[in-house]
Length: 181
Image (cartoon, rainbow, N blue to C red; front, side, top):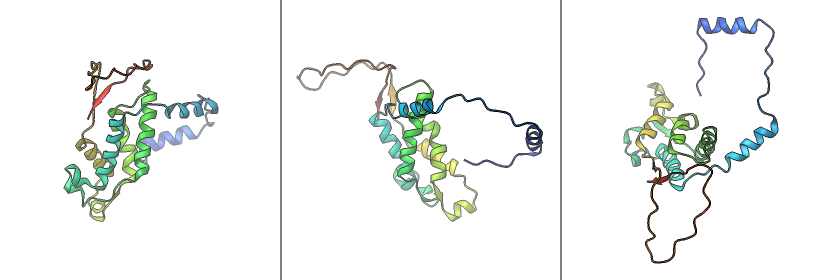
């Protein structure tokens, strides 16, 4: 994340605010609540197609030509590592939970991709000299790698065999979409 220096008016506001008694922050959550929320994120469902989408996003930074972006091969010196894959899953789960869902959508992955991936990408010397922003590279990767499409209220497909259908599981607390990749 890039945090630039403040402009004159912003710096004056910092001075004004810091020239008085330091405000006391009121706690919003206690330690146990934070730990419980962190544990809940581990149980947010990630569909197989969404997980594969996350892996494809990361792989596209390592081999952009394989994903229709041959011009990025000279821009990216070192693509994102598996830590980016894990970061995308964790941050997507947290965002889904914040949005009141117990499942991850491709839109969750897209919303946090630039924050998770841009600092894990190393640009080549020429790209740095040309002031190419890693965030723009990640935005391009997200735009080029196709996401699975959630299909809401999709009727059940008949089983391809004559065997009896498996028992239906209890409904999830939130409706979970099907994905078509």
